[in-house]
Length: 116
Image 1 (cartoon, rainbow, N blue to C red):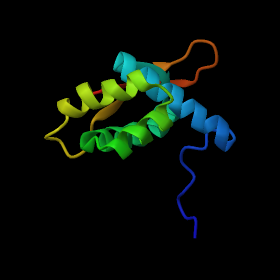
Image 2: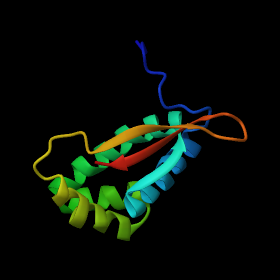
Image 3: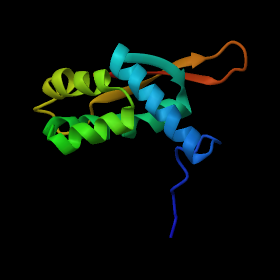
Image 4: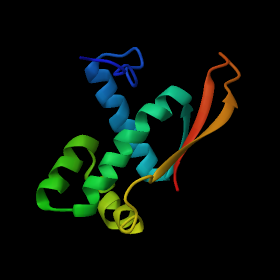
């Protein structure tokens, strides 16, 4: 059964959602803090947490999976060499979502997602 599996659709097709999360994850890894809408930030958080968890083991297969998911070898390298070492002793909770008010144009709830 599919009870409570609604989160993270964002009114997009599967391929559009995959590309969106890949681009947002790349931006978050590059800048370590991005501003986006609250639903997108909440949907991106588990994606990024799983990427960091995979980067902590850093086997060859994990590296290839990270490059495939991110589409950028440099960001996968930063994930493994910088962020995975930063969170080596932590077993989860690598990022946080902070509410940041409402957007001026359409009053959409905004949020900042960052690594903690």
